[in-house]
Image (cartoon, rainbow, N blue to C red; front, top):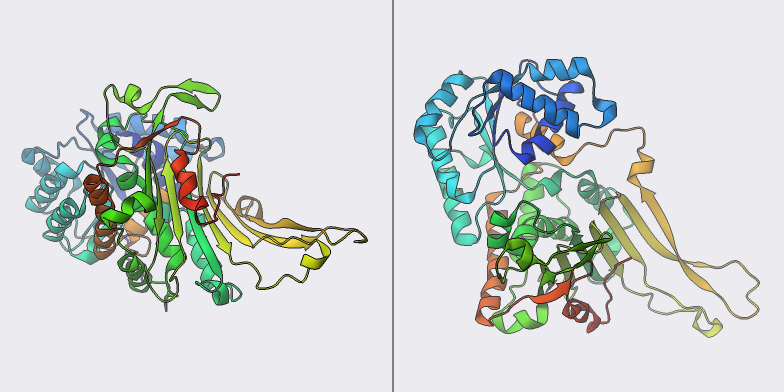
Length: 487
């Protein structure tokens, strides 16, 4: 697609944790590789009382802390810092927007805005930008989640943003879509002919998606206790993974075609009725236990009060369309799990007849595992015969055919997701950003689950830190004859 780079970038929350860990190192990486437009200025904004030099000093400290050692080039860091300037602003205070607009100056050459804020401040932020001329036709806005807490609040935010920005200038960010392995799902599915004939209900028995974290609340208590695992992880990241696995082949690799097909998947998700919630979902909350060899507190202890917020959720989902009818999608995410992992496991159906049964050969159905983090690889488990003369029968064993992206592309620098997403925001490519109809279809589905929990007065079941969640999550799959992939 045609690239249309802007000349200026505005980062709200420029002194926060996301900026220090991800945004500034990502922008430096793009600068160091000559990918940022010549003359692009980066204006940081936050409530902090800083001037340009003070912000550059803070940015320098962030780069020193979070850049890999092999990327710390003093000359390139110095030239990158010269792109930076700073203007303090309080999104809740309308008076601060005029000095911000003055600092940024003429935006006729294009401006991209990265906005990460609490849902309650979206309206004030957008109206403030609009009032001072920072929402015109040459301005794009990138919106970091959370975009609301349910369908109603999401619509309110989207309506507010749409009043100032047209849809083609709105970039809703889900950083999972910037991950290299996530994009490789598209290459795997649509760049290889041998998967498509079996990528359907005739060839696939079930799909499992696991996003597990070893951390607890950390510094996110204020947000997380009002959100919970369903809103925080399922509505955003996990459903995007479902869409990439389940979507029909797009005609072209462009923003409209890809997002059209994803939206169809979200609209095809079977709504879980209140009477089905107890059988199709499991919620949990971690209590004290051991994590990574250390004794850790439970959720309520970390929070400092009693709470019914779920830190774990498992869901049995279905997609009601021709391709996926009858195939369960088991979704699982939680905090204080045994390992940090993001993974998709696709279990194929067994062969219709085993010619080896009479000779003692036992077959396992093939499985495709797509690991997103911490390692990045694609592994196909296939059956092979063990070496031997087979006098006592044929011995078959499952063996992996493994493509390690880290090893296969060892000579290529792996970029963090925000590098790609920030560059696409600057250049105007919406392919890896989420469209409004996607967001609202996702909320419709998860809101129905929350309504079912409320109708049934569902309370999260306790699970010890360092485990795979409540035992009921095991039963969710076991009653279908399926076992979670945990190794």
